[in-house]
Image (cartoon, one colour):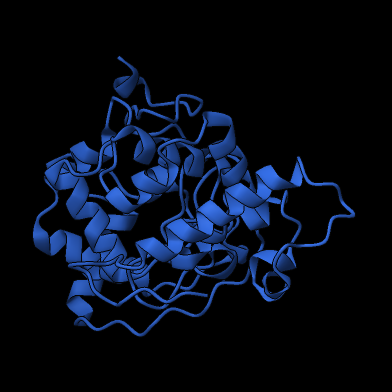
Length: 270
């Protein structure tokens, strides 16, 4: 596996390596359709490479570029920035790949890797990672005072009605492990990643299909709110193996793009 430098200012400088892996996977996929099974490899050394240990046409070989930064099998890396993608709902992963490819999420390295891939190909990739059933490591000890953690807990569990901030659990599920097919879990993610994504929602660097409910919510959060929420979430253990819920116990408090299949409260539906 290729390690990326641990930097939030320049989180990915291993793009050439990831791009090379993707090119290798795609070219191997194409070659597998044209080379007879009995043909010997042109370069015997290649048989010892990571790409050669799996069938060239398998999805595991096609996603080597993903695992270069997201970790083996998509289970994340310890650098604190690249999120876990293993076991996330397939609809959510598909939506995010489409958002990166189509410019609703701005991250040049991701856009570069998938800009020429079709909707169906991205959906297959998402389904592959969604099917990975891997244990979560225990959370790191929080590095903030108890009062900050309590503020985060209240916002996640109850929200702030006075400021029109719904509870996180109202959409992401009581266990905060997400809801199939399109709502992600919030646990098992590094604090740095959570901070950066809430900040991206606030500034418009991360967007979703309209109505963009997360952008609306993030704009209501203060920097202290963001710090508290991310610290509390990152300190929670992942229950029930991190499996997303099948349904929400109640209607969502706001209409959100990309999750049209989830009912919303009567007031939000109007």
